[in-house]
Amino acid sequence: MSANLISALKIPGIMGLFLEAMVLAICFIIGYATYRFSLLTIDGAIAAGIIGVIIGLLRPAWIVLLFSFLIAGVAVTKYRFSDKKERGVQEGRRGERGYRNVLSTGAVPAIIAVLSVTVIPERLSGVIFLVSIATAASDTLASEMGVLSEKTVLITNFERVVPGTNGGISLYGTLWAIIGAFVASVFGGIFLLTFSNTYAGGLFYLLVPGMFGFLGCITDSFLGATLENRGLIGKGTVNFVSALLASGLAYVVGIAGGLF
Image 1 (cartoon, rainbow, N blue to C red):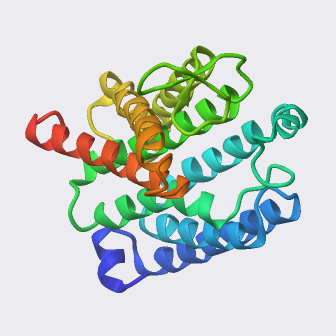
Image 2: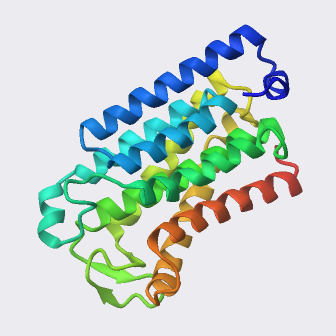
């Protein structure tokens, strides 16, 4: 972390160095643990570590939420894994996720962290960060729980499709998408209100990231049903673009509407 960045974050020099060492150690430990217990592939663990370092050095409090999402996402992926494997809709061989999965969900939060010290107003940055996390949480739950549904329809025309089809939605999966978005929004907001100065609006805005996060999940389904099904973009790109659009819209609304 450069001296200018430490100054911008109002972190004293010796404390800044200590914080850097702690962040690097935490990222290394978590990266190793996720690989050791087959939660991530080796390249996935490295990608998670790099993203964790970027976010942790710039916004230390955010790294807790990032890795909480990572662990929760892997847990949901492994839920009823034998059933998913039997249907051929499992993630990886044993539920592990690779670098593409990590980058598609972690790149936008990392970009927001960088912009939070250069472009995005500090008290708005935490809200935007939570939008990206809520989008990823919503999409992960919708996908991993939705594939267990017996009735899935395509979001564009509501014709019945096989569970796991790109752009397929179900009532069961949608309910979990809403839960994922708002759990990340509420608990993430409370955490940032307590441990960070990057969250604006107080308790009134605890649901805001959830709204945009669920919208991002819906966008993900539309992109999957249209562009991905036509082979124009891949799953990782769909995840990345959805989170980017949801976060960007939240930023525009927050700035233009003077909400934050």
